[in-house]
Image (tube, rainbow, N blue to C red):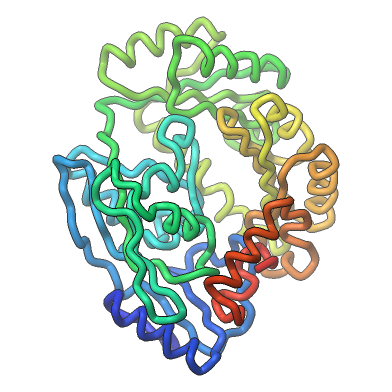
Length: 385
């Protein structure tokens, strides 16, 4: 990788950051660079550092359900490693197949299974990161109940490398269920779809995921109307009961294992394919309460999708002006909204995070604490930091 420093250890990463900081060079920090269209573009930097050379498994205790790995390890390789022991790290989303561990954590990636398993903040139990002063900070540990210093690690999750460089991450692992199945339901109107969601997540059912596709996206995937996708997981007895209880929600289509994998794989690939197809594409992400999730979904005219059990709604736009109108309408309703992904031609035409919210002042203070001269990943946090 021409013109890029690739440290092979935490010590080399720390030394590279310290040297760049001492010479007051701006720094571009990344892993596999798979999510370069996510968040904001990094301003031209004097030095580029990739963690791709740091890809070792440092410690793995299958019986304790814990693993420690370097930040540059491909996330797909990590999941393949723990899968051999019937375990998993249930984080998924666009570009995860190409991303590094550090990239997934720094971007705070999560997907449909967030409802049951949580996000990276729930699965990361420890971390080492290098500061611009050349110090290596240990936060948390390899014990699930060890929370000492874990709050420092949580600052790194979702920071997009604007505070420090993640060197290694410790995860708590989740047993891989014996069986996982998805059921699809079709509804003529959004109210019926969300009533079924309510019944699924508030009753005896315990779905891993509850996602809703609007009619535009449903049609693109070969379905009709509003599509509710419920995923269940467990042993055969749990699965049999879940499928039986879910049938009361309406006429359903149970996906075969092959169809199940293809369905969720298509959902994860929506953003990469959209950005490849449209030169001015962007993805708007709206965060709402579960109560407002239906309104947020119907506020988007084009293809749209909701993680309906967590209140995260996404819409895909081919033109920046349409995305801006959708964002303005969402902000007027009091919803948190930003451009999660944007193609290169769209970025100059749109403010990625127009209203960061009241806690942004705290975020700026934290940035000054870690990076007082604003050297690290300038602009990466949606153009605001």
